[in-house]
Length: 226
Image (cartoon, rainbow, N blue to C red; front, side, top):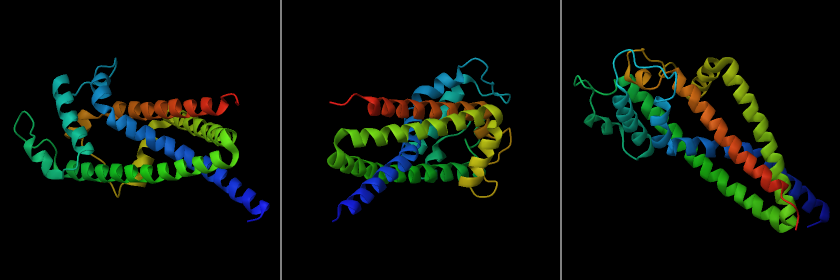
């Protein structure tokens, strides 16, 4: 293999790693926020200004029912899992439309997890290749550039959430879900548990997590040679 060919492969590896890095960071942040949800969701409900349920859910009921949903998203069970859960009046916890959306969300999470695993393998392989070809410096340069790109994208996301969260929220659902299956009545359990404030804060948590991960990567990339 010629020296020029080796250089081209090396440049391609760096470009690919830097391009995949933001997506890998975002997927990491999504999965971390989801896995840690049993810890932060009860805190979220207690934050100042979080809207109470106008239809009567108490704080304790919100915590209990949201835990049921989050457990479903993280386990391997099908929708029959919800058969065991009802509201205080004996009605099903979720109606058919809500159950269909929960199934869609679970499928999306499983897809995100699979994509994350695949990208993680590629990122590790590319990192190992750069380390072998250029030592620590080559890998640090790619980490630093990938982190910079990620921080820029996070800044765009944060500005978008601040300026027009609803536009981002609706756009996200139109991209990842078919039709209007994600639209619910205000009286539905899903909206009563997770009002718009909940999702706005969740986007912020994911952005903050991604910022922390990319900042750590940037610091690693800035470490002195030696």
